[in-house]
Amino acid sequence: MTTYKTVQFDQYEKMFDLANYAFNKEKTVSREKKFNKLCAISDCYGAFKENTLLSQLIVRPMEVYLHGQSFKMGGVGSVASYPENRGGGDIAKLMTHSLEKMHEKGQTLSYLAPFSYSFYRRYGYEQCFDELHYTIDVSELPKMKKTNGIIRRVRWEEAKLTLKEIYEKRYATSVGPLKRSEWDWEFLMLSREESSIAMYYDENGLAQGYLMYSFKGQTVGTFVLQEMVYLTQSAFKESWNFVSSHKASFHTFLYKAGAHEKIAYLFDNPRVKQELVPYMMARIVTFEDFLLAYPFKEQANKTFYLEVEDERVHWNAGVWKVELFLTTRKVTRLTDKEEVPQGSLLSGTIQSWTQVFMNYRTIEELAFFDRIQGEAQLVRDLSRRIPAGTPVLFDYF
Image (cartoon, rainbow, N blue to C red; front, top):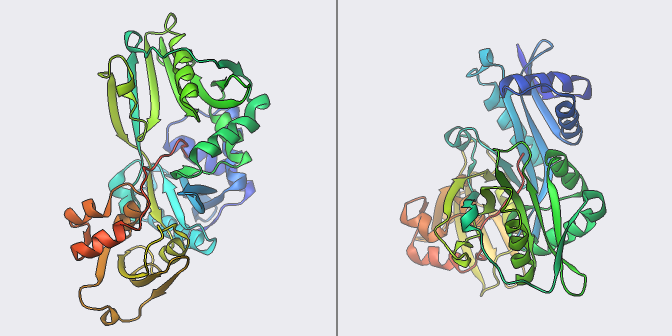
């Protein structure tokens, strides 16, 4: 008989062995140290037959920004089974179990990096993040006007407080990025142990931007720009001047940017190679709690009736009466669909509602493709109350 339970500290080695086997990774001391560090702060769930671990997943507790609000989020990772146990239903049970636990812990949202988008749609997840990959030949590097500031390489230990401050200033009002805790920053840098950091300082000596980059372990002759964060135009310009200063050493420059970073028009040659790459998925774990915290735009009083189809969990499915007032709101689950006034219902799956409120797609677009059903005027009314934005995420788990 298979049992599903929380994995304890003394069994982390079994999880590490399974993860390495399933993902065909080399077992190293540094990788095991990083894995154990992750398990220690996460909720680890496993499927066991007697004392043998068959399948597993990890939920890392995090917070994310959404239009200036902070939401608890469960980041799902290390979803794995031994090959001989795949297809037996263990992962399905662990996914459902993890959603129940996230619901209990108040983790309103959940993200994951899919090996298969169709597979995780079964559990209510949907594509919500893209990356924009720039592949820039050395001859195409931008030439920016020199600023009065300076940029210099810094060590992580001396610069971490400043990096965190710049990141928060840039992304606290964005859609979906991680609200990086001290632990998140340390784990990120453990993952980027071969990365270098450069900081931009303005003419007054104030840090206004940074970039993380690497050229170790990559294709020979490739400079990889992992993260560029800037608060001013000067920081943007000088960061690119710094990148361009490496042109004698590299023939290709790769920049993995957020989907919002459509900056090629600022280059002398905007015809650089650009590739929009589907990235991570998300789902609303608890619809009621999410709506109660969501920063709707203040408008005149309005009541919406939102129907949610969620095949995986019972607490979301049904019709929700959402009463929006100027400064407050009330969310009530209706016991009878007949209570909804004629022509007042907007319907969609939990996946579609997640895309709407995460700004991955507008409600008008989803209504056009019949992912959201309802009267056109209702669609427009709700759209006016959703803040504009583009989902961005720079972390992987």
